[in-house]
Every structure is written in C-alpha cells, then in structure tokens.
Image (tube, rainbow, N blue to C red; front, side, top):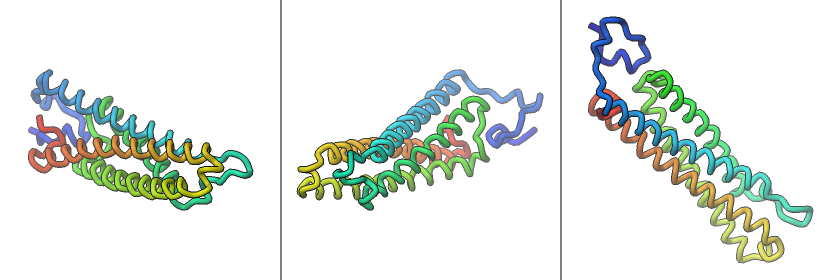
Length: 192
C-alpha cells in the first residue's frame, strides 16, 4: 500500500489508493480555508498594486516635486511592486491547488516557502510604509505641502494603500503560519 503522503506530494493515485476517505465536511473546510487564503492574497495584490500605481503617477507638473526624488517614496513604490508580483504568484499557486488538489511544489517546501515569504514581504511593506509615512509627515510641516497639496495628498493615499496591503499580507501570514504548525504536528498542511 502506498504511503498516506503520496497524494500530497503530487503523485497520482492508483486503483489501490482509492480507498482513502475524505468526508464532505472536511473537503468543505479545506475549500473554505483555501478560499480565504486566496481572498487575502487577492486583497494584498489589489492594495499593493494600487499603492504602487498611486506612487508612480504622483508627479503634477514642472513645479511639483516628483516621487522618485525621495528615497522613502522610491522604497515604498518598489516594495509595493514586489509584493504585487509575489501576490500574483501566490494567487496562481492557490488556483493550482484548487484545480489539481495538490501543491505546486512538494508540501514541505510549499508551506515553508509561503510562510517565509509572507513574513519577509510583510516586514518589507511595513518598513517601506513607515519610512514613507515619516517622510510625508516631515513634508507636511514644510513648504512642500503648502505649495503642492495634491502631491502630498496622493502620497498619503499611496502610503495608506500600502499599509492596507501590509494588513492583508499579515493576515495571510497568520494562515500560512497555521499551515506550518499543522504540518509540523500532523505531517499535513491541514489540521483535518
């Protein structure tokens, strides 16, 4: 009889393996859990992409400052762009898991990959947003924001969207951490 872990690692079932039983309640819980993760990844993608676009288009004429003249704003743009790309990749792995009922890579690698990258990119977004928020606050007290209110307002919107992307990615990180804990305890990424 094949190992009970054969299904998780992408191996195809044989006729002997069809005795493996999943209740419909367990299957529904797995679908709901995966749907929630996909929704969090979609929200993280949407907010990080919107933040990057708002920052990228934050130039209003020749007399207005440009976002790329400030290191913190460049950092916020790049961090949000990286997270948007990462979120697209992770949404693809979620869709892969829905359609194929297996992970893209071996399960042990997949759970640690998701958790590690969620952690790194969450902290990246948090540090970029904090640096940009500190710069925006400093600019508010100077002549820059009195002369160019639109520039400062659009910077604030981009920073706020970046923080929202961080929150959704942090929630996603909690779920991927739960998957790691389940994997360490039961040998499967799901507690069921």
